[in-house]
Length: 111
Image 1 (cartoon, rainbow, N blue to C red):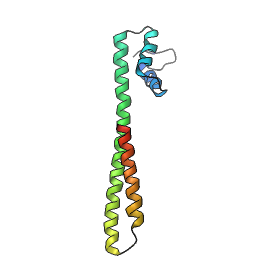
Image 2 (tube, helix red, strand yellow; image 1 turned 180 degrees about the vertical axis):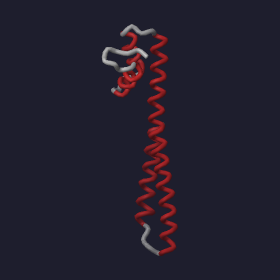
Image 3 (cartoon, rainbow, N blue to C red; image 1 turned 120 degrees about the vertical axis):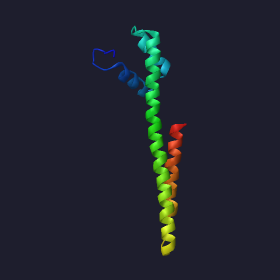
Image 4 (tube, rainbow, N blue to C red; image 1 turned 90 degrees about the vertical axis):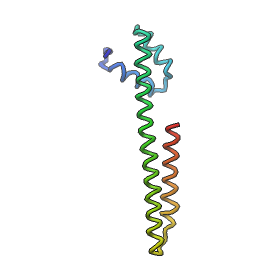
């Protein structure tokens, strides 16, 4: 890979620029100004964007799964508590609400 004087690889540098909030086009222009080939720059930036999106989707999937598990756990605990005639409002309303919030937070990250 192309190395800078600081020892940072090109892909790491592109990911850092994207994390700083620069758009894909701005990153491409920055790299083109350094004298890299246009086709190479476009391919590397496209792969870096895919990598960044993959990480975001993985985080979103974890939120969705955690929320779904919490909702399922709430269901099981509510059913169990209803047989013992104990108070299950915290489980029913608290866990379910938190689970639904986690699911929607994951969906927001995906879309």
